[in-house]
Length: 111
Length: 114
Image (cartoon, rainbow over all chains, first blue to last red):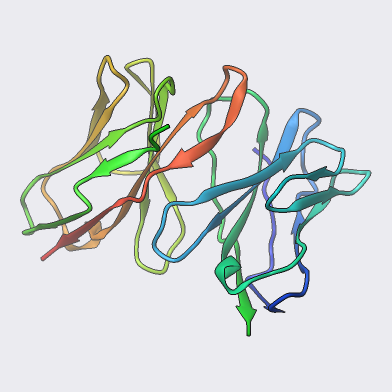
């Protein structure tokens, strides 16, 4: 699976949009981008995934660049409860192989 | 729909003992994955079971083992416990490869070795 690079930490003001970047320059054509988050000492939670088109759900939006080498997860109106470690993962669709979690980005939403 | 359930929530063992952790996947999910997360560290992949078979294991010694039962629930066994085995052990289930991707994690078992 392709490797991803994320900033170690980011801060965001409550109510503002949180934009979390991820680089995946070695992504293959059949690999999707997945985002999970882990709130302190809980199991990670799936957020969103995409292949090449921008995706939106009730939690977030995912913007993938045209060359697919990077993506941005957007939390449109961050709340204190969004404080968590956010993981960007690339993996082939339909693969049952385990997901590999990197170090992620610690997002801290400030009041 | 019930989520992934793990038991026990907390477990305290003495060095050298054995620990058994249990995981019940979401109904219909056949793949179960185990991860270890030591304090302040990332998730390290331990084991993957699908359809009752061990499909892959991470870089852990053989004293970490497990199995998957016919109802797809799973058990993780850690023998000869060492202090550094103290960690949060997370289980996830999925229908990966069968049209629905995305893991659902349990809340974990906090293992403390003293």
